[in-house]
Structure formats: structure tokens, C-alpha cells
Length: 251
Image (cartoon, rainbow, N blue to C red; front, side, top):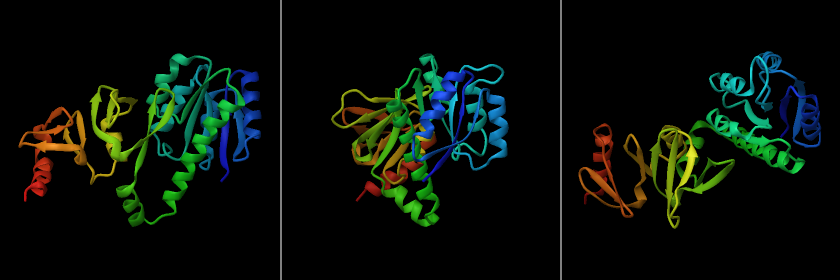
């Protein structure tokens, strides 16, 4: 697989370095480079086959985060992904808000670059595999998948499905509570987005703020479930689906 990419940075030395790193990476093809986001945006509209952008954040007129938001709100949100390159680590949170694949703080080495590029390779390999499968088969794979990847701080962490006890929403973040782990994983996403990644036959939404693993439920009443030592209550909005679940439990 060859990933078509562009580099965008208003610092000539940084743009040259990223372009050099791209040329040294066998599965990346640099199709263009730009010193401003506006010209990059024109190229994006004119080239639907583009897949990846190595994007600086602090630039005049249109900055990198703004460009990423435009992509995120378009029909290219899955086919065109962003890896941020910036000298300012305070923008990491904004990077995750626009669902960037990775975030590299300057100065970064070729090793750092290679790790970020590998994430892009894994992502597009997965996307290509899904596109080549009939819809029926993709659905079956989704139902039996064993793990999901979530962003924790500056990296993607693999979480085994069977290790999840329950998930709690906390404003812009969610907490993922796991077996054998005292401290939950904290990831910047919404409960709805995370629920879409989970196999629907193994998880149950009980509340605007909670999803539970059905396998982790120790006991249940008409209004709550017990997961480990935690009681989670069912809201009115989800009572119908919860009652259907309860009916399956009743012998």
C-alpha cells in the first residue's frame, strides 16, 4: 500500500525536514508540499485521492486546527486523515478534538516520525480491508471483534473488549473501567462515538452517561445493575432496551 500525502508548514526548514522524512518512508508518497493552509485546502478539493496530511498548527490566515476542522466536517473525514506537527504541545487537546491520527512535537526525530507514519499505515490498511469486504461480512466481523483502539494522552492504546467493565461519560471525555486495573483509562471522545466501535451484542447503554458490558453484570433489578462494586442506575430513556435485556435473563 502506498499512501498519498502532503506536507504543510510555514517554516521552510520544518517543511524540508518533513518532506525528507516522507521520501525515506517506503509506503508514503509526497504528492505536494505547501507553506500555507489555504493552498493546501485548494489542493485537497482538487485531489480526491489524497489520504494523509502532515500539518503544522500555527500558521497565518488559516491555521492547522481550522483546516482539520474543515476536513472533519466534510465527506473526507474518514478517507483523509491528519498528523499534526507543531512546536507547541499545548495544542495536543485541540488535535484530539479534531480526531487527528497523531500529534508530533518539534523537534521530532525520524523514529518519532516513523511511529506516526505506522499509525497511518495501520489505519488505511484497516480501511482498505473493510472496503473490500461485503457489508454482511463486515457486520459479522464487527460483532466478534476482540479489541478497540482509544486515544490516551498522546498515543493509541489497544483495549481488549473482554476486559471492559463499564464506560462513563465525563463532559468531553470518557472513562473506561477495566478488569484488574484500578485506574480507568481517560480518553477524549464521546460516549456515542465509542459505542459505535463496540460490538452491540456485548454492551448495553443504561444512561446518558453509562455503557456497561453485559458480561460484567453481576446482578440486576428493574432500575439498576451491579458491575463489580458499582451500582449503575437505568434512566427512563433506556428502560425499554434494558427491559428487553432483562427478559433474556429471566428463566
